[in-house]
Image (cartoon, rainbow, N blue to C red; front, top):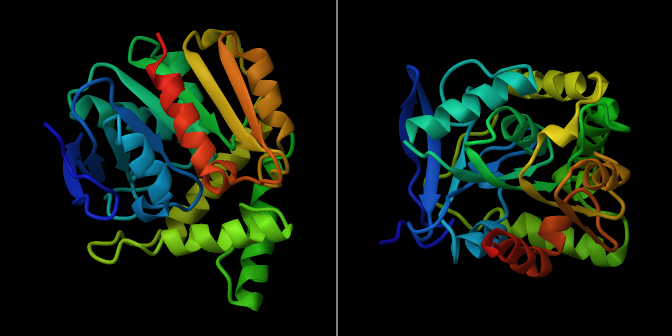
Amino acid sequence: MTTAASHRGAPTKSIDVGGTAFAYRDLGPRNGTPVIFLNHLAAVLDNWDPRVVDGIASQRRVITFDNRGVGASAGRTPSSIAEMANDTVAFIRALRLDKVDLLGFSMGGFVAQVIAAEHPALVRKVILAGTGPAGGKGIDRVTRLTLLDMVRGAATFRDAKYYLFFTDSANSRSAARAFLDRLKERQENRDKAISVAAFRAHLKAIHGWGVQQPTDLSRIPQAVFVANGDHDRMVPSENSTDLARRLPNAQLTIYPDAGHGGIFQHHTSFVPEALDFLAAA
């Protein structure tokens, strides 16, 4: 039995999570452990790269969702990573899932770390992409960098992700344009844009994570695949190396000539690696 075949055609559904409606999409085969995708700063359902979603969903059940107060989900957006993690667990429980894999990108990777540490029985494996540990180098500067590149994007009539997610090389800029084009492939039933209030809550949560005292990553027993570009400006790439070093059961891939969106730029490499990681005993 399968659900929708692709990100482009997956219907947006809603589920009650403790009295609040959460929007989500569900695609791929029903067999095996579902993969819950945890999104980045200011992102809604339509900000996931279709090549990554469809690539993972070619073999695994994939569930993407809007956290509380984001996009089509109701409620007030949490202003801490811990609250976002609690909401994610509640969402997973509402779907009646007792074991999941997590793919957390950027801010979503912060959330994934909390869930893996605090709910080890719920999480089988974790993919951490373009992310870093609590108190990681440069994470407290995400707000300033984001706002500056949003201004830069407005001045050049480009999406800020063109600058935030990719390097300034010709190859990476080409990948940026292709990525942004892919985000427009879904034409119908698109998600709502994030509100200003939700965006501010995200920035506050990220800053809080950036200035938080480092946590004991040995509390995360699961197998973890850490991935990033070699020139991540948002969450400096050395944070990925730090994660892989401090996690007890981690593997690391750093993609060349790539920034924060390394898994999108190198999706043809990332997707097979992620599938192999998820399939391994």
